[in-house]
Image 1: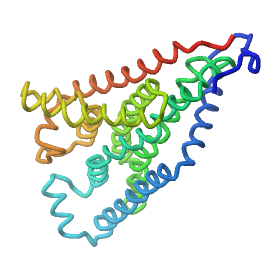
Image 2: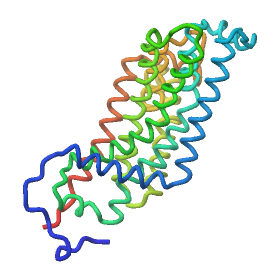
Image 3: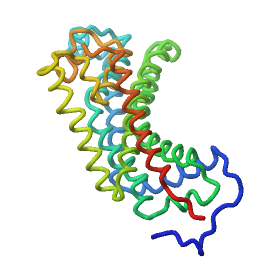
Image 4: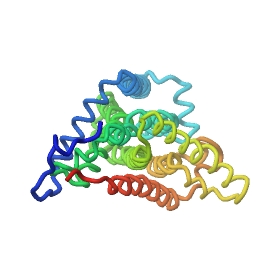
Length: 301
């Protein structure tokens, strides 16, 4: 409902950016979104699935009871037992893209749209809450849910790998853990910023979710393959897809063998530099849309 000037008086002091205000906003939104059963079920199911997958694979390979077919597949792909953690994280990235987009659509696209629908933005900025506080609080909320999906599973796989390894690999496998987390952080930045930017364009969360999914469908499914394979015959055009950009980071950092064809032939040929440029531009676009829309809000006087 609209903010009544007589019932809510604007702050008269100087508003300064405060990390505490951003954390309060993020904490309130996280608790609110966690009330959605679909979000809890989705995050919990994927996390448990990754734990089961990792436990089975690492137990087979570490305890001397290796399933011969699993060992043969790993050997054919160019992996050894010592690089099992990299292979497990790489396998995680082959199917997580769809679920990451879905989580971003369920959580990130409602963060600004709900405030716009309730006419709550003037209420925020009538208090000593700056634009930076508001944007940072919403960004931390979107990043939290995406990080649970994209960054927590690699950490769990690292813990399981360390616990089941016959030798101490906690220190030697730390670089693999770091390389496994970076693609997730890239995806968090890209998808989170896009979800917030699209959310700022709409007043209904459902409209924002459908707009976000439509944008990702065009940018991930239709345009990249058409431009890369049928028009320009240059795989660098795959950088149009924000999901492909994050996937390319995983391929580069986890040292995937050349004979593996992720998604479809030619994905590996996407230049790493163009993937980094694409991820940066998509992130800048999302935050640019968000800030440009928020700056037009009239503060209650």
